[in-house]
Amino acid sequence: MTDLVSPSSGPGRGEPVVHQLLYRSRSRNGASSALQMSDILAEARPANQREGITGVLTVVNGTFIQLVEGTDAALDRLMERLLRDPRHSDLVVLERRSAPVRMFGDWDMVSPRLAVSDVALLDLLLDDPNAGMAAYARILIHAVATQDRVLEGRRNSADSPESSPVAPRITQPHRPGPGV
Ligand SMILES: Cc1cc2nc3c(=O)[nH]c(=O)nc-3n(C[C@H](O)[C@H](O)[C@H](O)COP(=O)(O)O)c2cc1C
Image (cartoon, rainbow, N blue to C red):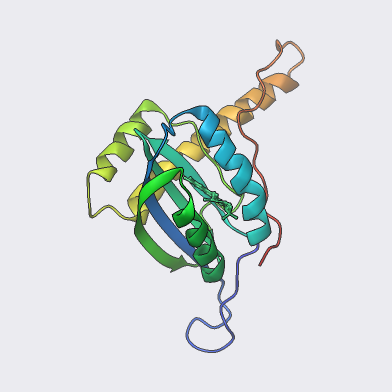
């Protein structure tokens, strides 16, 4: 994903800039269910591709945690839709900021499989009212990178001639289109 470029006047002129937003919300109907998550992702991914939004979405003990990145306007439009969505409630924006680069630029919405330790760490963060984007992002980036390595390992063993049939890939990176 090509990063956005700030207006040609003012400070930081011509430097790439992306807007990032992290929120939490309560699932209304047992969102831990893989089925609901896959419905949400199937809806989110094409829309995010059109909007130039990238990010990560997970659910921990019935609490959604989503980090989204794109233009300010695209994030505002997404927030309007999210606030109307009956599948969750009590949406709280934990942090909104601008950054020089995307953290999840290869993903129009990734939902990594969380290790037990990731769940425990995210659970701790959800109890900490001061936890911000950096703390959540560290765990989420690690989870995505771990999943990528697992998938890479599966691909490599699929390539090897003596390998047995390999399980299908869990999630595939979706490169977002230009959008912005
Ligand atoms: C937890 C959660 C995360 C979502 N993430 C996205 C997303 O990243 N992008 C998106 O377009 N829609 C996302 N959706 C779906 C939107 O809330 C909304 O249903 C969808 O954009 C269609 O909106 P509309 O029917 O108002 O046009 C998410 C929904 C939930 C419950």
